[in-house]
Image (cartoon, rainbow, N blue to C red; front, side, top):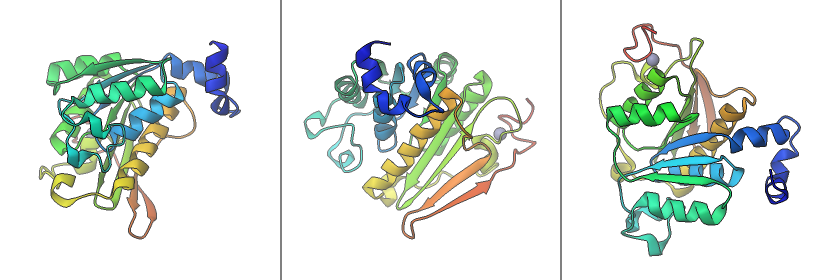
Length: 247
Ligand SMILES: [Zn+2]
């Protein structure tokens, strides 16, 4: 690591449980971020600033005026641009020491598997359940750790899955519940709530990449920002889970 990098990351390297070894692990890591909206914005910015060496950004959408209230990686001048390109420019300005790759399309099953296999961690920052389930399946099949998050109105949640052990995957959480929940386009979301949840996803991703502490495995973290209360509920692995059950 150069002197510039040592200084840039010095406040993190100061943490005894992190140290230079943790910083080097981050530098050598590759995170796949799916969705560059309200959650993906803080996730990508914190992972870039913290020094995750390679980021792959996935989003097919373009920046819309109604995104800017919460998708803080994009600027007013980015309206109409591809979100991945707008995000890449922000991240490069934030930290020139990292590599940023962009995929401006929705990933099909095969490409999702391929991209998950190449990553050390996958961040699910998308906005619908069918995409979340597809991402979860790709992670379980390739054995890639997954940090999934969601936020709506003044509520949010985070769950982590890693291979090995008896961890519940995202599919175990909802079981047969096939009904698509509401999206923030229908119900709204308070701007900083996605920031809180995205920041927790970034924290969990860094913990997974550097093997720090205890990630939110088989524990669903829930936020009720109206009362500003947190709850953690234990999630059991579903033995009949079509995604992780027979493995
Ligand atoms: Zn499962």
